[in-house]
Image (cartoon, rainbow, N blue to C red; front, side, top):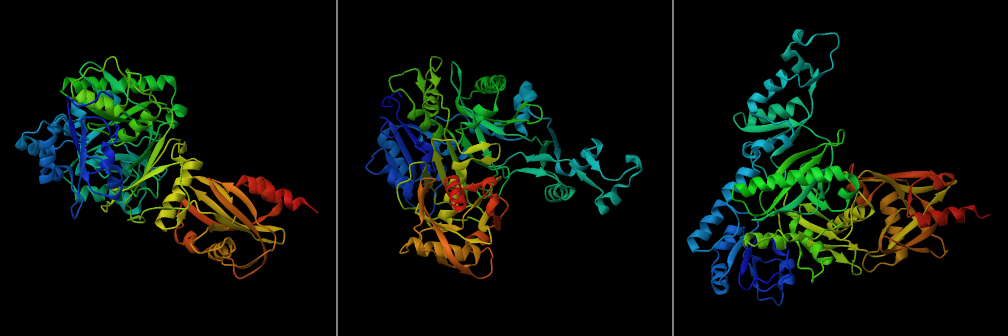
Length: 575
């Protein structure tokens, strides 16, 4: 990155993480943000970062109005950069005589908002799904006119049916479709309409409000970050957009992360070229309207047809930019003056520098996932570690508003097995979330037990994020506890049984980067019943069930860890 001494920039942002797309020692680069434990550790010893500590977290425009901010900007004589521009930010900068690098907030809103976007796209509307814009009160009649129902009644013509009686007797259901209001944030203005009641509720609540509706498209959602420069359009790396997974969010349309490896597995070369064509044409149109710098597009791959549809345009710095740029920096050749990271290209474009001879660094893997504030997880305390964790890093946010970022987890590896399904590392991160929720120590040793009776073994049947498997009853070592005590306590909590351990030496293994110990049970009594956190937190995406499994069936079931399963099967065969 060319240093910024001649073009100093102050990035003002609510969350410090958004500004970490370039090395913090970049000359001429300054940051103003809220105080938080993460921000404090990041800014330690750095004079180019100003952290403002108030009773509550300040939004960007409030940070800009703070007296310390004004003194900091005056001292460093820098241009202003923000995550997303607004009219209020523009007004504050104008009143203080600051040069704001971000393009027009008015253009940003026009392109991002769901209804005005359709008109702005002009000929590029061809890339959208088949949208219709109506007032909420008009949607029902429109769907009727389009024969948008599946009827369960047989041998009756549509014209002979009485609509009111159908409503009363629930004799028809709506085809699924998506309804979007003009303005929304992280999916809050988007609804999947699956029945008549949902539609009627919205029509009664917002009869005059316009919404755009379109058929529901089933398939993976993809996104990438692009740069509009004065002489070119640069395409960032395509990532799979992780959306709507419980317990990370309660909203099925909320984005909770990105995976940069999965698109290489699910997209053909032809589809990648089509994706880039869409991004280029949107970028050219943005430049014609005066835009420069970052923009993102969200594209859905229809599973049935393999066709790509443009769903969203994010006319700002997309949230995935920072980590994409950090991943690019990890594999970046510092002597290569042609390659730049996405965030570096964003800064160069805003400073009106040419980028035609530059290329964005390609990444082939990496992922991040965000736990948002939900009903089940309204807050999280600082994670506790038994030993350093080298598979991922995390950022804890002090946010409390429903839907806001609570914990961001980042890794250099993929976390998705396929569309809507986490892989082993992804499920491990899910375990980490639950561990932090219950204030347990992460990656501490685990103690588990073999409870065998009448040629059957007691196991926990699991279904987590679409994957079904079995595990041995057991859990994590707690403070001031021996492994034997852990095994006895966890067996009681999970199965309801009071056990006595055998004198046999426990089997030791390493699974998912932590030590595990497996004890044989000599005696047990009590009533088998699922209990503890497993019973309390049971839900469809993280389901627990106790099962007695025949020993003869062990080789055929998906029992984890595989190494212990194999060893146990071999042991049981001995005379």
